[in-house]
Length: 143
Image (cartoon, rainbow, N blue to C red; front, side, top):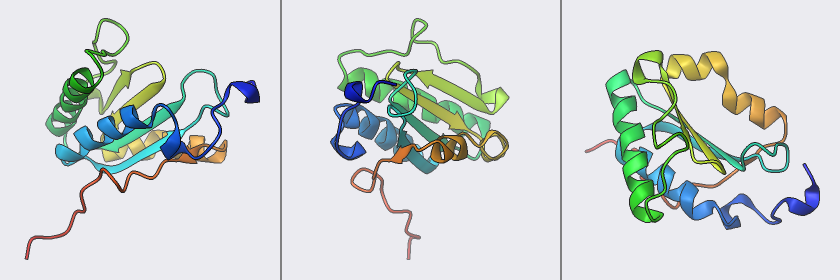
């Protein structure tokens, strides 16, 4: 990766941050857990951000993926995933990939997430976490 091609500054100020926030918010509204966004543009030319979310069931993962697709299309002038808007993988496989080119979204069951450890691999290579606290709702218990 050519360092001169990489945007300077923290991930939350990146030009792609609004898209990442839209994705994280959509996942959060469907009760996704452990939502993380990692800027990887300094270590790969394949994509700029990786967003990883977990759902506790395959139907929930399908709902999370659908919600992300709907919200991104609405917020970003009809933007669709590569491949005619069809996600890669299925809820039955435990892993759905939404490829938006500059942002790749992994919707995974906790078991698949633990097994493949995508987050750990990007962290070890120098990925930068984006603060999502401005879009994620706290998971406080109801009194």
